[in-house]
Image (cartoon, rainbow, N blue to C red; front, side):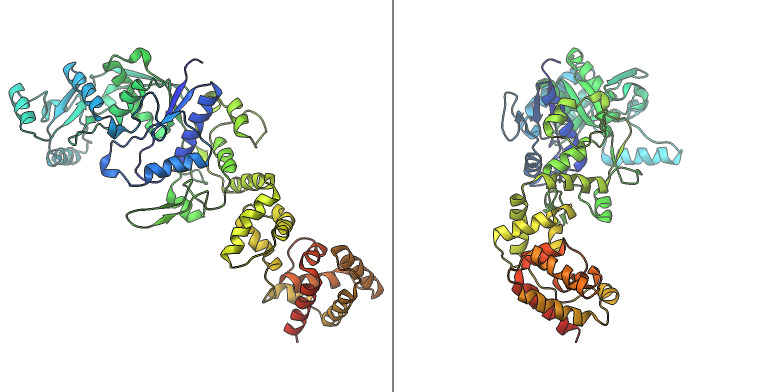
Length: 506
């Protein structure tokens, strides 16, 4: 493919949904595979829904995930500006051209008049649509005398510009994922292209900017498929049909049960993020969790998202970004929605966490210790992380698996004590304490050998010796190999904790 140019064009109306991240990712993979360019354009035509900080959030989130742009609002480029509110004069030219060529008209209908018309239709059991069948009875430049239209415009009367869909016309959209989609123009209402605040709507600005920025492929979410016929008609009306980009509408990200689009409420209910980064709503102060702050690695999020709707055609599940680029194709994107799988998300994070150098994991876990006002030798922290990292999906879970390495247990698992602390256990533990205190060299292997010899000498099962000691050291029956625990804690701490459980059971 030649001269591939794609764009990701979010609206700064709040945090970036993980579905939007997937759209950005697929655009990135497509551009990189074919040596093309990826543009970040901010579509802020809806000023009423603009949220401060949202644009910066989008840029930071995509940078964290490793999705790099060639042009955009944050880096510039040959087709700047890349923020639609900075491109207003360009849209006015296109609107005037559409009106002059008979493809658009000014509509002066007040909100009250439109509401009244909708209620009238509802009483008749119908749904009102401003289209070829109804516009002749509305207040617009098609029905008003030319002098009246001119007067209203000169007087500054509020109006919108609507697209004039031709009546009973078949409109074909060729979609690279869904094939040929044909709709009749009668199904489409005369969408607003330009608003009374002087801003274009998404539809006009989107088409005008894609043309100006020489976009070759529009890869976007399925929710925009119903708008595609209007966009095709706008290209035709503006004389750009020959250079119209190819369309590819991505399947929805669905709830884990597959019933409906994945939403923030689903994440809140089931305990997983739907935003890449944590977001604090500037109006309400409400905080929404993010993948980064929840402990996900960016590689895991990328890998997870890539497979939500795209199939590489093999059994391989883990991919580097370069492997995704090499294998990616629009032809292997599913038409059906993709269900979010929380267990799989955890699995991906575990897999990528295991690839990290233990020193890196230890550095992250050290922040957890600092938050608990604890400090430890970096080498010791690294050793602990090495012992437990296979048991966790997130760095935050290391504390649950390893807290006893840094803080002695203050209580003991009641179920474990009931099952494992027998009548003879205190005597056994006193013997074990004396044995460990007398070891010439204290090491994990020495502890293991001494306890094994003791059990054999007293005709005890290893569990009768090892498990009570494990409870003394950890507070329960969990954790890595006991000799490793003893080796990390050292003789003095092992003896102190053994004394602690004996005193607790007196």
